[in-house]
Structure formats: C-alpha cells, structure tokens
Length: 68
Image (cartoon, rainbow, N blue to C red; front, side):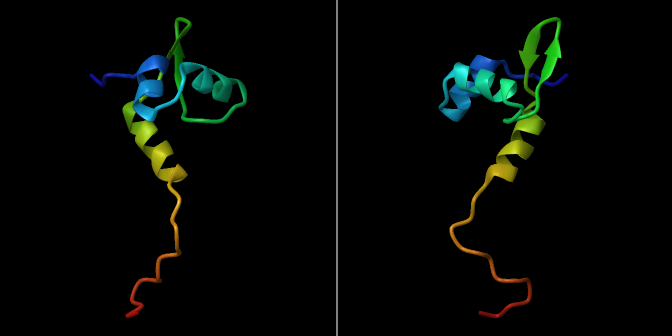
C-alpha cells in the first residue's frame, strides 16, 4: 500500500510552510490531494507529476534530430 503524505510532510519536502499548501488548496492550485475523513493526503505519484509539470527550462531544448 502507498504511503500518502500529509500537508506538513509535503510542505517540509518542498521547503514550504503548511499554510502555503492550505492556501493553494483554497485557491484551487497546487498538487492534487485526497480528503478522507477530514484528513488531507497527497499521493506521492501525483506529487511527482505535479513537480514535473512545474519544471521550468532556462532555454528551449532543440527539436529531436537537430544536430546543433
């Protein structure tokens, strides 16, 4: 069984305050979460997908097959 992360655990991992994640949930942004019995949990796989989607490139990557 997966080990889901709590708001505090995820905040620590990302270097954020738990309040930031709470605010993001209220604003309908940030990583997807589950709410089970009033407890907010984050799926590690969905955290990874979210972080990948947030990744910024400093310069565009050349198209595949470009020999530059």
